[in-house]
Amino acid sequence: MKVLIVGSGGREHALAWKFAQSSKIAEVYVAPGNAGMKLVATCIDIAVTDIIQLKEFAIQNKIDLTVIGPEIALEKGIVDEFIKAGLNVFGPTKKAAEIETSKIYAKELMNKYQIPTANYQKFSDCDKALAYIKEQSYPLVIKVDNLANGKGVIIARSEKEAQNAIRDFLINKRYNCQKIIIETFLEGEEFSLMAFVHGNKVYPLVTARDYKKAYDLDLGPNTGGMGCYSEANISELTLKKAIETIMIPCAKALVNEGRSFTGILYGGLIATNEGPKVIEFNARFGDPETEVVLPRLKNDLFVLIADLLQGKEIKLEWESYETLGVVLAAKGYPNNYQKNFELLGVNKINGVIPFYMGVNEKNGKVYASGGRVLILVGKGKTKDKARQNVYKELRKINCEKLFYRADIGI
Ligand code: AMP
Ligand code: GLY
Image (cartoon, rainbow, N blue to C red):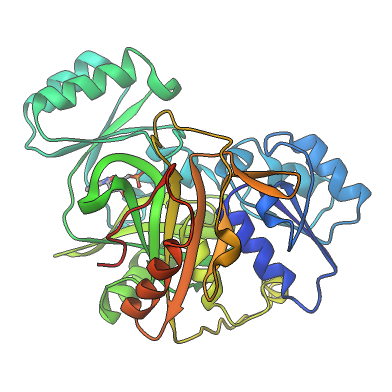
């Protein structure tokens, strides 16, 4: 069997690594991938948004299964295009993916089906939004409706900060913003819960905890994720409620709305005093959650997805050890950062898995090419053991032009 993974980051490397272990898989392709994945996959130079070329590649190369990484490809309708061509694909249609690509759609669905989330109002008119925030208490959360690379959320601590955010989004049209939502601030432990979903069928994965802020103590700007661990620090009861009051109802709601979801439904959740609530839904594997969750999955990923797509019951099995990953990013990230410097020391790492996020290769040498360069994932009987393993190995990498958070898992 041949599998094609669409995307180029650490998440796609982890998927390729996992598929490469399948006894059913002869060939793993990643489009466009990155040079760090070469040990487990063949990289194909097609952009994630070039859905026609991707479809042609899948047809010509008789790909048995395509898995979609990034939300931008889902928004472009890659799954609809593959289904029309009779191809086997794991991901939601454009309409089902709106659970991620439109925050207003997600909110309206949650309200209609009483899925717990923060109260909100939507706005496209700047003056109306500015009048509304006068009556609110702070902090207040302002979000861009459309996709914004994870950057379209501002936690405003004062009316002044909220005004700035609203003007930036609705007047300056940052991130091509046309509409925003303003929602109440929720307090609690955040966690990520992904599930394999096919219509009404929902199979939760183990939980993970993502670190979005650039610097230690959760300071600095938001990033694509600076580290992660699995299992998240939440109670069994919270997890049970999250599955029963959020994940299953969401999948059923989408079926009911004629937008049946197939793929990974990702709940960005928060354990509040009133129980778990939704911060956001994503319509795909999380990054960096995937890099810490897949190393715990015992099943053959290809068999799992193939069975799921055929409507068979699946049973997920997990390693009891915990995993923890720390991201090495280029200094300056998420703003301007250096590129094209050589990564030294990566060949000395052992006992932990490097998943490459943004690298290229010249004459057998590996160079940083992205803001987030790689994530090192370790395992251990406990989270602390996993953390010790990762930080010990991290020191072997030449870190002069790189930085990482020292407090992942603490
Ligand atoms: P999002 O892109 O929606 O996941 O938001 C990014 C981050 O903003 C989340 O991981 C939370 O830390 C924070 N956030 C978003 N919405 C809320 C909310 N209603 N209450 C508290 N924090 C929030
Ligand atoms: N880790 C958050 C995301 O994948 O969007």
